[in-house]
Structure formats: C-alpha cells, structure tokens
Length: 512
Image (cartoon, rainbow, N blue to C red; front, top):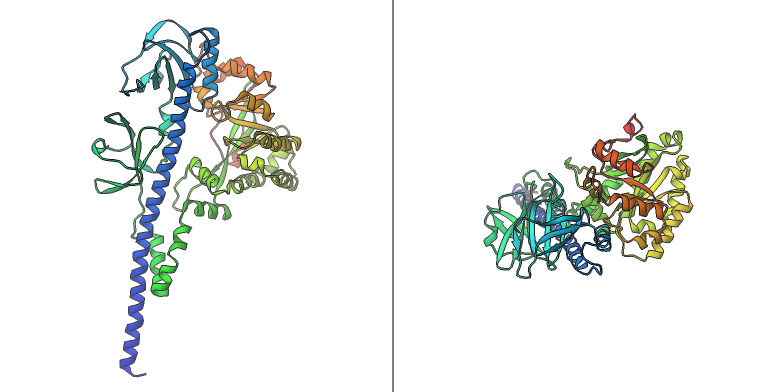
C-alpha cells in the first residue's frame, strides 16, 4: 500500500473513531441527564403518593369524628375518638371541638373547660383550618400539626410529611388554598415559587437549576425537587463508558449500547447488583425484657451504601424492591445473612430471638416456609430463634395471609405485627391473623407522658391481653418512658435507643 492510500485509510478510520467517540460522549451526557431527571421525578412522585396517603388518613379521620353516634365527650365518644387514632396510620390525637374551642380529645380526655387554639395558618373556603406547627394543649413543650373542620380536629406530627421526602432531594412543597399559595415545607429558599405556574410533569428552572414538578391529584399541593448532589458529566463513569463504546464501536456500537448502560444505572438494577454481590449489610437493634432489661432478642435491619459510599434509605430501596417484584430476594438475603453471622450465638443462647421483616408477598409465597426450614437446618438453628415481622400493609386476601402466617407458626416461628397503630389497625383483622405479638409504634411511646391519665397505652395493653398477644414497645428513648411502660405491663419487651442502637453482629451479644 502506498503512503497516500495508507494515510487516507488511516484518516478515515480516525474520522470514524472520532465520530463514534463524539456520538458516544453526547449520548452519555444525554443519558446521564435523562437518568437524573427520571430518578428525581420518581422520588418526587413517591413523596406525592406518600403525602396523599397522609391526606387521605386525615380526611377519613375528620369524617369519622363527626360521625360519632355518642354524646360529645361522653365515655362512649372518647372511646370512639381513641379507636380512630388506633385505626389511623398517621393521626396522633382525635379532638372534639365546639365553636373552635377544644372540649375533649383521645389523648387528654374531657377538659375541665373549653380551650381555644391559636389562629390558623391557612383556611380554605370550605372551612378547613390548618395550624402547621403549634403548641399542643395539655402537653407542655410538645408541638404538632393540627387540622380542624367543623367540630372535628386531628393532630399529627409535621414530620409525617418531612420524613416522606427522600434525603437526597433539595425540595419545596407548596400548598394551594383557594387563591393563595404558601410554602408548606422546604429545605431551600423558595425562590418565588408562590408566583410560578406549576404543572405536574413539567420541570421549572430555579436559579439555573432544573427542578422536577409533581402535583397531587387528590389533595392540594405540589413538590418541586432536584437531586442535591447532581452527578457531573466530567469524570462520570456513565459518560466515560459511552465514550469508550463509541470510540471502539463507532456510531452504531455506541448508540446500540446506550439503553443497556442506562438501565444498568437505574436504582432497581443497582439494587439487584448489590444483592448479587453481597454489598448490602445487616445490623441488629437489641430487644430487652423491661422487667430486668436483659437482652432477649433483636430486630435485623438491612442497610445499603452505593458504590459512591452514599447511604440509601431503606424506605426508598425497599419500596423499589416491592414495586419491581423482587422484595422476596431481599428477605431471603437478610435471612441468609442472619444465619451466616449469628448461627453460633443463637445455638449458644436458647430463648434469644432475632426477627426478620417480611412483606405480604413472602407470606403468600408457598415456597417460603420450606426455604426458611432449609436455611435453619443447614445452620443448626432452632425455629424458635427466628421470628418474623409483617411490615407491609396488604390489600390481599386476609385468609391467604392468615394461612401463610399459620404455616410459619406451625414450623415453630413467632410472628409479629410491626408498627401497630399505623399499618395494621383493624382489631378484627388482628384477631383473624392469629399472630403471636404486636410491636407498638414509637409514636405511642413518644406521646406517653409521665403521670398522664388518658394515655392510650393501657387500652392497647388490655386489648393485647384479651387476644393473648405479647407486646414489644418501640421507640423507648428515656428511663422515664421505660418505667412508665414497665408499670403498665411488666411482661412487655422494649426496643429503642435507650437499650442500644443498631449494631453489627459482632457486638450484638455484648453486655447491654
């Protein structure tokens, strides 16, 4: 080959490689931006769905308060209010009003005299009033969010909305009240959002940053959100990978692999890869017997740090696993890890029980009980050493769930209902499932006041005794709370920061 044709061929090859590299880098940057926008939009939509669930709970509770068949603030009416709180996922107190003055509540009982509340922050044309962050009557030092309508009012923790925002987002949530818009919660300057037109699915630009917008169709309000730590194109493994594929394969190869790399970077794909590579970890929060504060068990909790070292909230990735249909893989990963880390300790400590969280899909899986039996037999661990906590609020057939629970109990495992008072609130449902124990949600513990005469805890304990259920009290953070609960039920177990934070397996059996 002469020099000229060789140079021509070389130039042609280099030109093709340059075109492939350029297209690959362009596609990589575009895919990175699309991925960021998709992830942000999904996290924003997840918040809207969770906030709508809170809103639905509020509307239903207000309606039920007004539907009480009993005389206002009578013993029967107070029982009606307390039942509403127990059966609600988010409401902390149900209140009876007259002329906007508080007469009685599920928490304080009947007040000696009607008591007025502060002026509402928002009020709609329908007469619904909202106090975003106000001192709670009869609870010195405690603040909450109050919603009033007619002669009914409910109290909830304002954090019920803040906690539902993914921690990786910069966000502002606005609420529209008739012709007025107000910032409801935010972790950034609102930047004039009160004057912007917000349409779900149509992004807005604030100070040069793109923000995704998602709005509720059931309730008022929108979230405007962006990833706090937006990945940079420069040095991005995704962009570099597209460039490399473009350089090697040219235009055709680079474009052909775009979708595959993008999918590999999605959260569900990354979670599946983390499961397969054993990158997730399990920690254990101690459970103690309140009578003598001896450690008698622990709850296993899954944790995940991505390849960049960022902690991803279990609420986020567990929801993804449920939505994508591989939550059972997560459950089985946790059980295998518990056996690998704790089998020796459990064999040496009869009576010590570690619980594993289940979804309804696990309970309904006819192969799950056999899988558990195989793993325990291989590790030489008795069935009584492993309990299961049902955490997913299921709309599946109760009879089928009950049969799955009974299969686990028949195999020798204790079955718990987790976060009682939020997810599983129907007493008839609880009796139908025939579980062994209930774990009382930490919100009841936080609301417990030393010396309070109208605490809901005694009623819950009495109900548990009627159904022959054991009790685990979650969220115990102070000695005062532990003493109060132990005074109500000395047979109860306790879990919370007072007794220990979640620890690695190597420290679980250390002296508490």
